[in-house]
Image 1: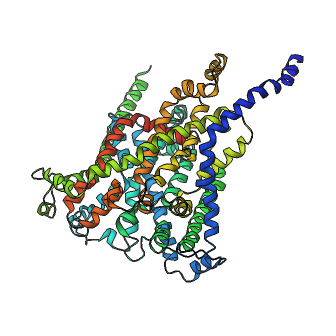
Image 2 (image 1 turned 30 degrees about the horizontal axis):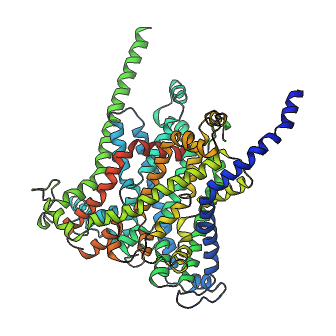
Image 3 (image 1 turned 90 degrees about the vertical axis):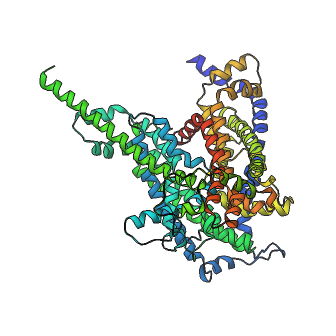
Length: 311
Length: 289
């Protein structure tokens, strides 16, 4: 007992000498992160807030106009409402679709099948291809007359659809591409599935639970932390969608694919309304914040914590 | 074992066998569907204009017209775009991986004042969507520092830790290495940097490769930032070049698809090289959270 207290007493003194050089090393190592946090993250964040309160166009020096940009956005802006709806519609479809698709494929790949790494590569490869090329390539599959999907429709005796050139089909069509691109979610799900204890399944099988029941009562609860992570990542990515609008649709037809990030791009870099665009940015930020907060707040209720060993 | 029980076991075995064959069939069907768009794009890139408009369309070109690629390369300056893209990606990957490792090491192993605050700021910035800071950064790079039509605004951020997400990844990896390993170094009289370079770095090489891969994909896909920072066409990256090419040749689908396939190629090659680490790294990001 005595030795313990002695050790504890002596302890702070000895490392304190190490501490100086240790801390010095740490600060040197952290110079890049420090610069990044200040100049690339928190200062620009303050900048967005500040600029959104001005009428800056980049030409004249900015004037402080209070909340005018926000008022204008919510009262007279012709695009913002369509833009928010298009973004939510796209994100909803894409997140739901890619979660179901990737969990399903991951469960298939988790079984004992031959050439597993080959199949994993097939599902994963779309993710490493440049997004722009993916969208350009798919635009040919979606072509209004001779595209592959229209061939399928005509074989089924249905009317042709313009897909990305039709305002009511453009968002679902782009979402389908998003689902197809969800290879990274599959890999994460697959890793999670391999961590589900086999004993649970064996015990349930002994009790006569069928495959569906085992999925519902064992796989799904054990997977909730992974589902949460994938849901969060996919939501953040899909709410910020911009590449298809830049590469293919230019926000059209009409405003049907004028996603919020594209709207911001258009305001800032096409029309040079920097102050106004910053106000739009903060709306996107607010939407993202609401979704992430809801996800985190409700997570306690549906995330299953196995044995409470969370660190 | 009774005969009945043996029979049950046998029938169960047979059932799992059928189940496995069934699963395999489903996997094959889905893999074909998932691969189909890529095949369709590739087969179009080898066809004549008349052939792609034929009804019913064929899965395989009559004649494999590799001359389409020659024609494409005359307009779509693929090698130049690839070079430009690599000029951005190479320093970014190296610097991003290196600085992320430095920062991850400090957060994982070293004790210093203000650590928890800095760590909280770092993790907090992970939830900050990238596009929120886009406009102020654009103003800073172009107005403040005068980088117009330049690659620096795309590269320099990676000299600052390569993003909080990558720092986080490296830190998680270092934490999982037993401390005894670097204590052995301390006893031998190695300094903190020596420990980092000769003990930690070799041990976390997979994580470093993964970070480099993530930076690669991130830059590869970032059409928006390339669009706002790069103006002149001789500085175009693959993504910009392809967008522009599509605008020029709207109706010539075989050539557009040939350009698309060319843009696919580096990604596929790159995946085949890094496959093992890719899966490992993605697994890591998913689980150690």
